Length: 127
Image (cartoon, rainbow, N blue to C red; front, side, top):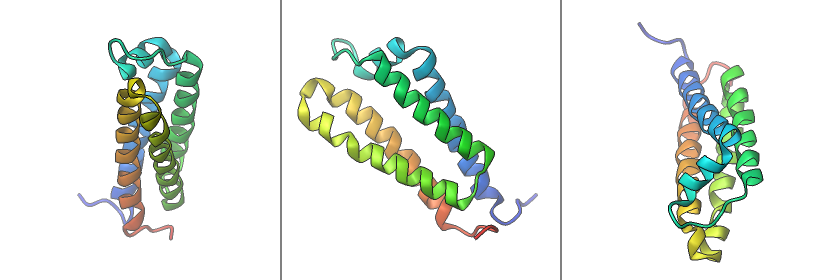
């Protein structure tokens, strides 16, 4: 069975949406546990409000990606995730204690940004 034109790319965008929904839910529902895992043992305390804020952003983006997996949504998601990855340079450079958390966040955001950007470059029926 072959997917219709753009079908594979829509499936990729939805897959990213599922992953981001899971991460967002973890950050919103268990912010202290998620923040502790991200910061690592002996890492700095990451405010639970900040973890919830990131979780809310991830969840909102996931809703868009799942509800409307179009080229435009993929491009917007790639831009948002790319911006998030770049924003992690500041905490990475600011304090060695934040490096693990910044590296995990930047890696996840870079991976989703690249995946969405690649999906957006391919042939879409809604161009």
